[in-house]
Length: 113
Image 1: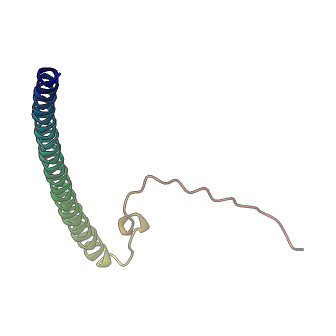
Image 2: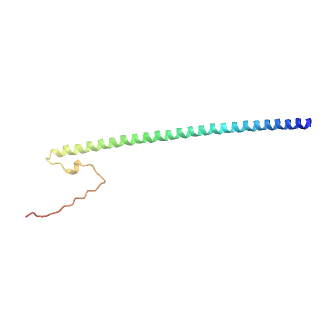
Image 3: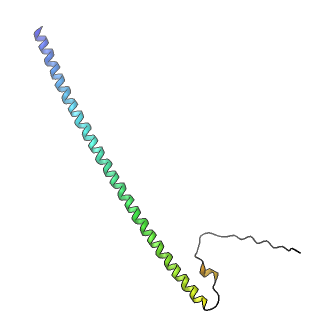
């Protein structure tokens, strides 16, 4: 009976040791996965920040180009207006910028007699 108890206890201790080893492996595995996930999230956040920064730079470049284009147009228009002032009249078309919008004007003729 005592030998049987010793064998059972030894078996229990071996199982407990194996269980502890298994739990340590699982803990290490979970910690490694958590670390990898944190690194993946950090890399993704850095990538998104880089893309955002690149977009902001592109937008600023577009704004600068548009501003420059507008200034050039204004210079051209003011030059045309200045040249036209010498003749006494200024064409309306020289004072407006091109637009993609169309305008429709309804004209109704009638008599109040």
